[in-house]
Length: 615
Image (tube, rainbow, N blue to C red):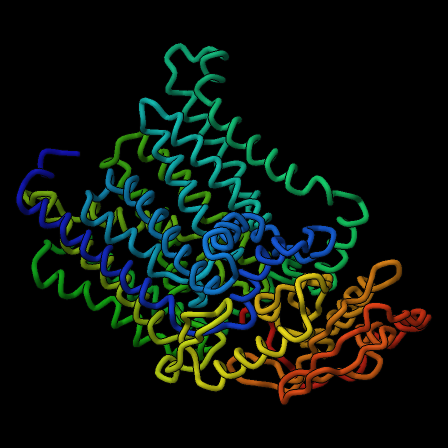
C-alpha cells in the first residue's frame, strides 16, 4: 500500500471504514433473533438436520436443495454435539450465517484494498453482510452459493497478485467448488473462472515450462479433486441410476426453473413490470457516479452521495411487489453490478495490469453467474444479485479511483466513495430491519420461543403458542425410533421432531398450486410410498398454510398422496385447528395400493392461486 496509508487522514479513513463494517456486523447479529419462518428458512436447516436423523440424501430426499444441506451439515452436527439436542438450532445457524458473512466480507475487503485502500474497502465489503437475500439470515442454497462465490473469486484474485499464490488458489477453488455444490448451475461460471485464474498463476512462472506451470497450479487440482472426492464419499452409498432418475423426475415435475425462450420472455416481463424502479435506481447510481467522477471531493460532494440511500428508499414503492418479504436492494445490487465493465474501462490506466486482469475475470464471472441464477431460479430477476454481488463490489471500489485527481491526495479522493458505500449499506440495513420473511411485521414480534429448535427467536404470541403446542403433541407420538411425514408446505415440522422423516421431499407442495405441473408432483410424492417402500408411522396433516398470511389447505379426495396414506389404517391421535396428527399401529397391515391412484385427472379445474417458495 502507498505511503499515504501512514498519514493521519488515511488512518481516520481506515477507522471510518472499520466502524461501518463493525456496525453492520452488530446490526445483523441483533437481527438474528427476529422472526420464525416455517418454509424457506426451516427447509435450509431441516435438510442437514434430517441427515443426522437417518434421512438419506438421494435415496430418501429427492429435492435438489439437499446439496446445499450437505455443505451446512457439519455445522448442524457441531451444534448437536455441543448442545446435545436440537434446542436453539435455528438461532445457531443464523449466527453461523453471520460468521460466514463476516469471513466473506473480509476476504473481499482484503482483495479490494488494493483498489480503494483499507477504509473504503471495508465499507464496500460491508455490503456483503448487509445484503441478506429475502431477509432470511440463514445458510441455504442461495446464501451459501453467494458467500462462496464472493470468497472464491476474491481469493483467486489475490492469487493472481501474490508471489506465493498456493494458499489463495487452494482456498478459492474450494470455495467455488462448494458454491457449485450448493447451486449446481453455477458450474457454468465457476469452472471457467477457476481455469482462468489457474492460467494467470501459471503465467507468473518465469520460463513457463510445463512442469513449472503444473506445480504452480497444483493447489487448484488438489482443492477441486479433494472436494469432489469428499462429495462422492458422502453420497456413494446412495448413488444409483434409480435414485438419480427419481430425483430428476421430482425436480422436473415441480416446474421448469429455466425454460429457454420461455424464461427469457418471463425475465423481460419482469423488467417491463418494474421498469420504473430499475430506471430510478439506474438514475440514482448514474448521478452519484457522475458526481464522484467529475466533481472535486468536498464536504458538499460527500453530502450529495450520502443521499443515495434515501433516494433508493424513495424509489422502493415503485416495485410492483413492495410487500414483505420482497425488498429492492437486490435490484440495486444488480443495477450497480452492470456498471462494473464501465468502471473497469475507466480505471484501466490507473490499475496495474495483473490487478486489472484479475478484477476483469471476477467481474465477468460474477455477471455470468447472475445470468445463470436469474435463468435457473423461479424468482428470476430478484435473485440475480446472488451472482452479481462481486461485480457490484468492484464497481463500488473502483469509484475511489476514477475521480478527478489534480493535486488531491488519495485520502481526500476516497472520502466521497466511502460515503457512497456507507449510504448503500445503510439502505440495505434499513430494509433488513423493517422486513421479516414468513412472519408478522417486526413490531409484533414480542414473544420469545423458549424450547425446541426455534428457542431464542422472537415471534408473535400466536406463533409461539402454536410452536409449543405442536412440540408438546409430537412428543406423545413421534419417538426417535419412528418415521414421520408432515404435509403440506411445512418443512419446519421436521425440526420439531426426533423421528426420522419419511417423505420424498421435506417441503411438499400443495396439489392446487399455480401451475398444473404441480399435479404431477403429487404423483411423484405418492410413488415414494409404493411397496416395498414403507408408509410413515406418524403423519401430521396441516389444515392451514402457515405463511405470513394463513390460508386454508385444499386437498381433493383423489389427491395421490391422500390415497396412498389411506392404505395405512391410521388412527387420529391429536386434532387441532391447524393440524391433525395420526398414528399407524406398529403391526398394522397395509392395504394394497389402488390401481388407479395415479390415473386421476392431472389437470382438474384450477383453484385460487397459492404462493410459491420465495414469494
